Every structure is written in C-alpha cells, then in structure tokens.
Length: 461
Image (cartoon, rainbow, N blue to C red; front, side, top):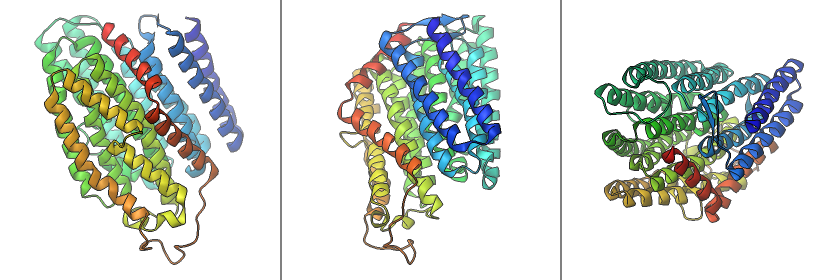
C-alpha cells in the first residue's frame, strides 16, 4: 500500500509540475523536469520488481510483477518520446501535459484488476493521443482516422464488457465458467483491443495514422499505445478466459494472418514510415504466437518481445524524425546516408536488424523465446510459420540498410557529401534505445527473469 501511495504521489507531482511549467512556457526546464520525474518512476517500478511487490487497491487496481513490468516500459518509453518531442514538436509544452494524461491511462490499464479500470485506462490513453497528433497542423487526417479507430474500439469494448458482466455477474478479472455469451465476449475483446494492437484485419487505418502523424508521435503510438492494448488483452484473456482453448486457437489464426499481411505488404512500400507501420503489424503477429500458447514459456517470450519492439520502434522513429526534418521520407532518399551522418545510418541499421531478429539483439531473444515456447506447447507449426515470416522480412528490412551505405547520392541533393548534424536530445534518445537493444540482447537474463516472473504471476492468478 505504501508503494502505491508513493507511486501515485510522484505521478501527481509529474502532472502538477507540467501544468505549472507549461503555463510559464519554460520548455527546457520542463524537459529536464520530465526526464527527472520519469526516471524516478522507472526506478520505483524496478524497485517494485526487485522486491516482488504484490498489492491490490480497492479491488480494482493491482500492483504486481506484470503491471510493474509494463509501468517500467511506459515510463522509460515516454522519457525517450519526450526527448524526441522536445526537438521536433511544434509545442512541447502542450505535448508534455497531454502525454502525462496518456501515461496515467497506461499506468491504470497496466494495473487493472477490473474491466472498469481497463475501460477508463484505455480511454485516458487514447483521447490525449488524438490531441497530441493534432499538435501538428498537417496531421488532421491522421488524428481523425485515429479517433475513428479509437471510437470503434471503445464501442466494441463496451459491448464486450456488458456481455462479460451478463455472463459472469462480475466486472473483476477472474476465471469464468464456460458459456456462449462469455465466448462471444472474448471474441469482442480480441477485436476491440486488436484495433489498437494492430492485429489484422482490424488495423486497416494504422498505416495511414502512422504515416500522417509526426514521427515522434508515431514512435509513441507504435512503441507505447500499441503495447497498452497488448497489456489489456493479455490480462483479460489469461485471467478470465484461460479455460477457453478455442479463444487461444483463434489467437493462433490471427497471429498467422497478421504476420503474413504485415510482411508481404511491407515489401511493396517505398515510404519509410509506412514500411515501418506494416512492419509493426507483422511484429504484432509474433507477439500473438506466444500469447496463443497460454503457457509460461510462450507468454514470457511475448512479454520480452513487447519490451524489445517498444524501444527499437521508438529508437528508429527517432531516426525517421530526424530524416523527416531534412525532407527525407522514402527509402530512395536514404542513398548515401552513411556519408551524411554515420550515427543515423548505424542506428537505423541496428534497429532494422533487431526487427529481423539478428543474434545479440533483443529482437533475436524475443523471437527465440516465442518460437521455443510455441514448440514446447505443441504449436511447432506456428513457430515454423513465424520463422518463415522472419525470413521474408529480411528483404524489406535490408533495403534501407543497403540504401544507407550505398555510394550513390540519389535523393540527397547537391550537398550530399556535407555532414548533417543531429540534435543532441535526439542523439540521447536514440543512444538509450540502442543501449537497451544491445545490452539486453547480449545479456538478456535479467529481463528474461522479469518477464518470467510477470508471466508466472499472471498465470498463477
């Protein structure tokens, strides 16, 4: 209980400080303040994981290894997004305030022990995100499409909650008895949360939203908002529908079509951000493989992959944000990038290889754990299809890398040889993402232990 109160107090301090500094328009001080408080929140979540804190508040909020795992991701991820927003947002003060409300929704959903807090948390995370997209005057269409997606998702979620209450007589996330009404509710939960999680075929507007939003916002949407939906979906399906094997078989089907759709369509993309959007869809498919096992090993792999993709995606969108500021949007525009900025070319290549699953990166460890978990759960065919999709993805992930290290200067303008500097906050954000990707790729044991404890707790609950 003391931990919950401390965490709540720090979160309130983050909000009040942003409101005050936003009014005073102290942009640099506001960034430093946000970094400091978010770093404290990261440390608090890590301390909670280290001490194995498990506590429930009012029977609707639960602080446990699973929720703390996601709180650490959201806190650290938002810290990186703040650095990118400081460099490229038209109004960082407004972004900082809105992002705090979105972060509060992410926290609430991570700690949900009831469908009430799931609903409130999802809304609190989604609505500020719409206004964050709108901070850029060029992103009105993307904001409208995101709002449409969020509205459909929350409507279907509301219907699912009503059916769940009608079938179980409770809104608490606990194991339920079999009934047709609850089975239909489970399907609606997958559909509604699948919209935000980029699960095919519920993701048709995702590429438009990602492409039309500023790159730092796309990093937040794909790196954090998407993971919020997965956090909710995992909790609901594991806690309430673990006895429904058909539900997890349905997840296996969605994982296959999501992987193939994302990878095949990504091959045809020329716009870098749009390619990464379809890549993000395929990554959702890999995560679903581990969830479909409904076992500790597979779920641990999914949690590890969620962590891996969150920071790699934010990192590469940091590179894309810098590229966009230099009017480079397509893969052809990357020709000769290594001679313009070696750090940008190296960082982009590393994150691309992480998505492929190159050894000694978090992407490799995550996929390895997922495929191993699927094989051990009797879903070897699903692991084989995942490996096939990883091979397919090599083609389109290699294109930007080859372009970056090409000797040609097509699309780079007359000053192609001149070195272009990258803003210091962006360099810092990308560097942190690189360190996370490499360190936990080379030495993944601590993160594997955390993911294992989170999976074990949830399945045990």
